[in-house]
Length: 321
Ligand SMILES: CCC[C@H](NC(C)=O)C(=O)O
Ligand SMILES: NC(=O)OP(=O)(O)O
Image (cartoon, rainbow, N blue to C red; front, top):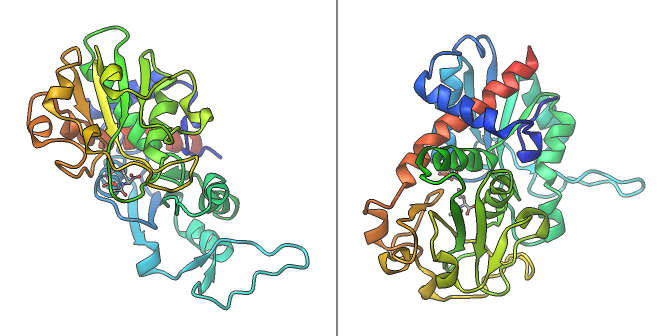
């Protein structure tokens, strides 16, 4: 079964990036690939870009699209399984077990996309990606990750396409910088960005306050720098993102507005471009002057979500032939 859950499902990254760029140039070139097939997009959390770009990409490929906000439109789903002598008694808020729900949705859909964020309460539970494991186990069809507890591969593929399109050096310096936020957000986007940049020919630097170290399996060969100004020196791309602490799981340890990206900070770069997955809180994470100025690639980056989704869906559909 060819799922698209992480970089580990990607055999040839350069081929996948090229596939996305080809789709961008010829959006309907593969419109027969998905003919008479259906994709179901299940959202356990909010979305703008992922919802719209994935639906559009699917339609470009001739797929029928079903979309569901699982928690609101459907029934609350119980994800935990009974263990020998320890049955899960469903007498709480969840009216349906994922065993039935996933199997039924797998009857209606040829592919299932799922968004299910980390709950940021229990690191072990979040990092075993229970929702995705259960759907993989019971749906019987390929699963597409629309942002899981620990990764966001469609975002990362769009980020790779964007960097390939805008780089002016063979091996650009890419800086992932932590940004301030007053709420706890998942590590998924940052994890995934590091994982995919480790497969790209870039110099990857990760900068954040002490206590915000990402899990080592995601950071890989990146250089970790606690001084943001130092990290920004000579950067070609600055990728801003907030995340809550992994080591003090789910906690907001630092409220330091000096980590917000401003034009003064970007002046340290080598004519650096600013990237962010969106949504972004203006003047909390990044100043208007950067988002509204020539350095910002956030709209081009968001536009590439359609082509990233189309490349990923093409791989899944080709694997079904
Ligand atoms: C694409 C980003 C989704 C989510 N952002 C928020 C604001 O919840 C996150 O930080 O993972
Ligand atoms: N970047 C991203 O995934 O945006 P949404 O959360 O709006 O889908």
